[in-house]
Image 1 (tube, one colour):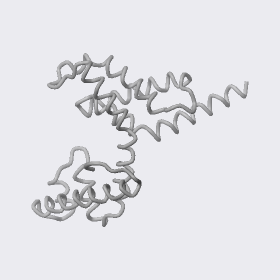
Image 2 (cartoon, helix red, strand yellow):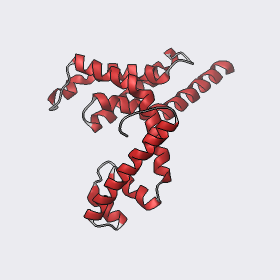
Image 3 (cartoon, helix red, strand yellow):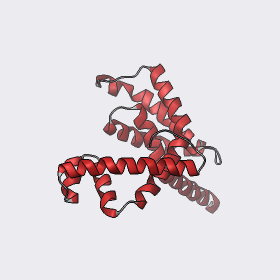
Image 4 (cartoon, one colour):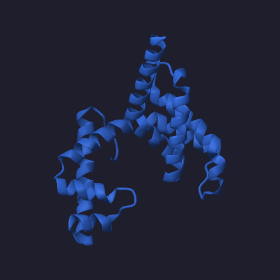
Amino acid sequence: MPSSSSNEADSRKRLIALMTRHQRQIFAYIYTLVPDRHDAEDLLQETSVVICEKFDEFTAGTDFVAWACQIAWWRIRYSRQKFARAKVIFDDEVLAAVAQTAVELRPELDERHEALAGCLRKLPARDRDLLLTRYEPGSGVAEAAQRSGRSMEAAYKALNRLRKVLHDCVTHELGQRGHHGGSA
């Protein structure tokens, strides 16, 4: 029976590696379909449980993110009653169209994310910290200004300048890779 135990351990390792590597993409997919971040986080947890339960059905060598997003799609449809009280409810056609667009844009968005991460690393630490603080969940310009020792006006000006710098950098990086896209 050691081979069964060994196969189970290998399967668990593959699952953990795939989930760790792709959790951000799965969450991004869910968040495009669910208007509330907390609901999207809950759905990511529910989806992760189902992925673990059904991992033996996943075919190695196929697109894990596509498979996981299909599970997320069904979890979202199943959970729609929870969102019936929300201000914005998409009908099934709109939800399906947004889901399809998210799948189609995933490769481009992944490349943009990689380019953005590279461009962020090129910024001076103080500027990078200002941006990261500004976009932390629950944070804002006031928090970023305070942490960076800037006035609100200086923080707004710096953030506008940094957004342009990042946009130009991402556009340049994607151009170097042979992709021509819109905004970052």
